[in-house]
Image: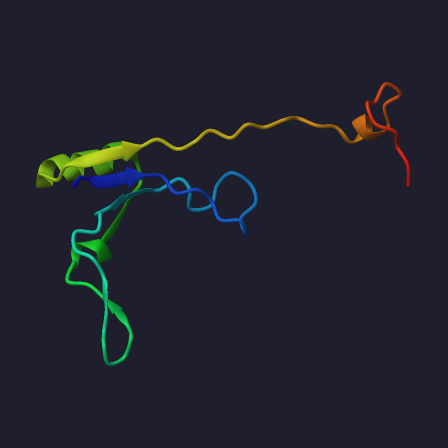
Length: 102
C-alpha cells in the first residue's frame, strides 16, 4: 500500500484561513489489523509504521522525501473552499424571497 501525502483541513476551532493547514503530512497506511488485548481490553497492533507521521512545509518536500526513501505515495489535493459573499444588508432587501419578521 502507498503512503498518503495530504494537507489537513483546519479544525472547527480555528477561524481564518491559516492555522496548521499549510503543512503537508506523510502518513503510512495500516498494514496489519488491530486486535484487542484479552487481559486489559486495549487495542494493539504490530504495525509501527502507522505511528509515524511526518510533517513537511511544502508538497514538493514531501514528494522528494518519499522518492528519495523509495516510498510509494499517493497525493490527496486539498479541497477548495466555496465562499459565497454575503452582505448584512441583503437581509433587509425589498425584493427578498422570504418575508422578514421578528
